[in-house]
Figure 1: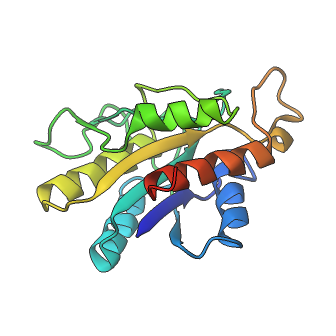
Figure 2: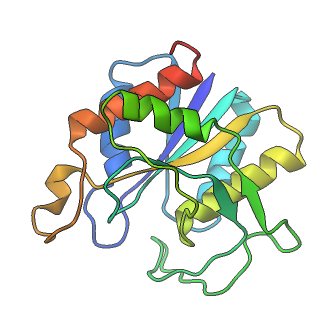
Length: 199
């Protein structure tokens, strides 16, 4: 079973591209479980790890919005570090803090990152490997989940994928890159098919 998480809007954005994309896909796909997470340090990780414990999926794909990126970017590595430039949705703004005290400096994705990029590119969808998930809630969730899976010896593939803004989100943002909704949906469907072994 495939479990996909996505975030609620945060900052000044009334929408989160990953929420819009997943809400569309949920209407037609019954073979995937989706969960919406709060854009809150630690709370997002607690919600997702509790669900992982409950449903024991084969694969976990965490999604997040990366304004400023023009391509879908699977993340290669999660860092054990928080350095928030804005507040999360509970008003927290941790600076220079480890996510897990005593934890490893980083965890690598166990998703086939390069295969995902190749499949998307072959499908005409812009995609790039990313080596930085940032230092905000996306990276913190990614690290928390990888730490949980490894510490508890789950045989679960997991990783994080960032999606650009949707085209409608950049109407008033000069020169901000975006990806239209149809391409974004197609991109996530390709990732799902690859992870389900149908590609």
